[in-house]
Image (cartoon, rainbow, N blue to C red; front, side):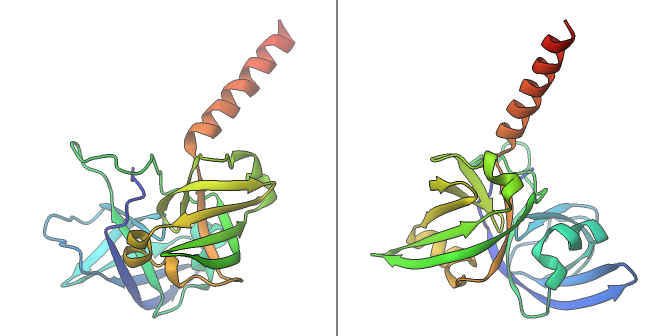
Length: 203
């Protein structure tokens, strides 16, 4: 479980194909002193398992499913990635509940300055449009953001200077792809309503 509060912007320094999967090495400035093999870390919002560690870097495996539904299908060495270790008991929930299970890939359609801030407009997959709610939460490359406006599958967010300085979102340009995770609460509500409807239909 994660909060969407990015703690470091690391860099993929190696991508090694291993049959249908790929092994990546990520360089980071995070203190890995308390990390263990098998720990979870969100890399651009995608929950990955730490499979190896060296000084200032860790390894993780990208499964075929991860490659199919995230931006990591095109992962290359040199890519800067948002990093957040998994929550521990007692940690502050500063953003919103983020699972690290990416729903799909969205595309940047607009990027413009707004004073010290930056407004980004995205096009999400049509199947995810119903989970995008004005003033609701969304995770873009793992960063917890508030949806400013939504129109069908298109939505926009505002990036404050802190977010621009401490994530990889400030470098996004039209045409770039990002990992998208919609708010988990909306999915639970939808599922409960579906079950209630089936129960009423069978009554």
